[in-house]
Length: 285
Image (tube, rainbow, N blue to C red; front, side, top):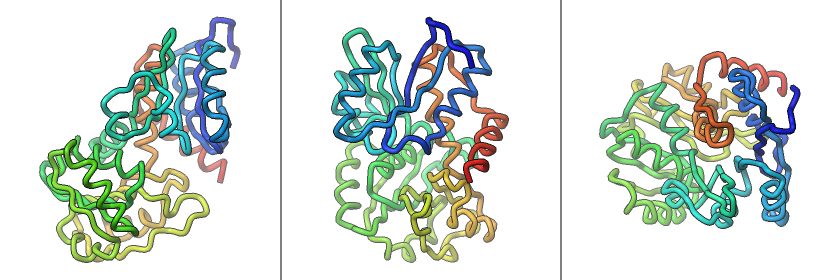
């Protein structure tokens, strides 16, 4: 890749950041659309986040994508934010204007588009969402976009689930019912979709231990984890004949508005793009 002095630059900031597929993803689109630009990985400790953001903004970057653990800090540092970022209290996209930083959150849109592409709208159906962290907040908003009628929000700490449900209730039409993971058996039989928004099964983390036999055969199972691409949850679900949705679709779709903001072209999510990312994941092991 050759960059000119007029190259459009953007970054992906996190700690760590070497695991991120964003440089590969944006690099694919940059090559596809013949754009003089680059997506630069930026490793920044929590205490250095604001300094790094100020530095790349001054260096002429158009903005950055934000990954863990900086999404809440990204929202806090911005001068203005879109409604999705305000609802989530976090941002995965910072756009640099002349003197202002704009925060956006495309995680919810990314998950909603991935689910819509694979299973369609929920049309009043019930969904079970596991987790009560930032990812769960975004996933709840995504389920709302798809028209869920009821969302069972289950977490190891039911108190956290209750707090999240209370904070989101004014923003969604769907009924949000918080509970503990132990409530799974009582709510699974009525679910059309199960979404795991926890980090269980990611990298070296222990896999999610849940009995899928309670789930209707027609229900779909989604895991927002994309490394590994097929978690134990998805393997078990596929073995039972459930439709499965991995986290790679969410990653690709959430990147669309970022790429457009950075490089001025709205890219398309295609099977060829997915194939390229799957190949990289396989090479990384």
